[in-house]
Amino acid sequence: MFARKPKTLVDCELEALFKNLKSHTVDSEEYTKVVDRIVTLHKLQQNEKPQQVSPDTWVMAGVNLFGILMIIRHENLNVVTSKALSFVTKMK
Image (cartoon, rainbow, N blue to C red; front, side, top):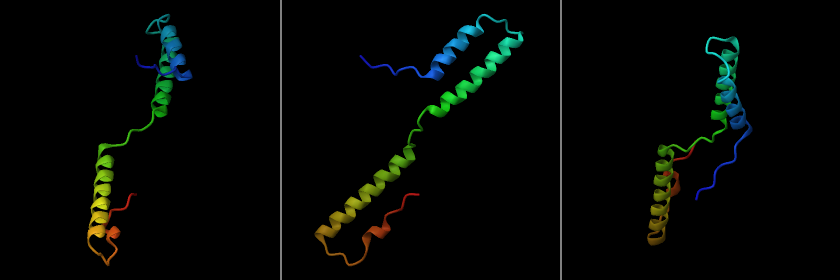
């Protein structure tokens, strides 16, 4: 029903490291090396994910668009001699 995302190289490497982790005992030196690699790859994987836009940004954009539409509607109905768009907040 839904298309699955193709696995990245980081995902494949993480799977291989988890399989390798099962063959070592917890107190061995190889186990700690594999765990360190997993932590490093997990940080890499987290950096690959796109950042989502915060809800505050969506609200700010919506309010600005609503304000612009209200100003344009008012300017169509009434003559405005000042620059009404200077009231709209500017994005950083």
